[in-house]
Amino acid sequence: MTPEEAIYKTLVNYIKVHGKRIISISSVFNQKEISIEIRSLFRYYEPTPEYPKLENAINNCNPDTLLKKYSIKLAERNNQKVLIVDINLLKNIVKNN
Image 1 (cartoon, rainbow, N blue to C red):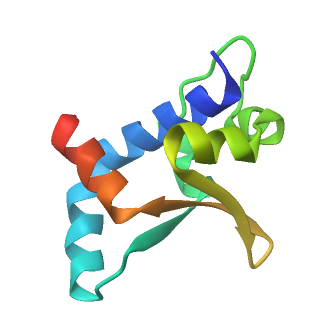
Image 2: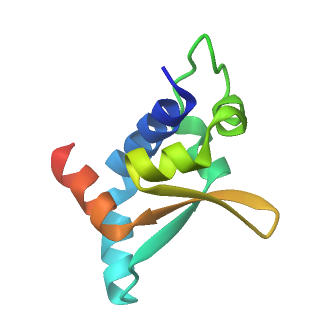
């Protein structure tokens, strides 16, 4: 598993739990994308032999690959790493899971 796949899988696990609520809130504010702090994803991460912690996957991921393959931006805000996710991607994940 690549680090990008591990991050995407973690995001999907998170969205399965919180996706509908996030979509509802984002529609009230007419948001086109949302930011999810990496630390909020920790409990949804499933360790792999290559990446026992989410931080390992984040540190080894190629942000360009994450963007091109999954349309997810890795950024830093207020000294915290975040994933920036388009609302349409979020809706698609909710619909398919």
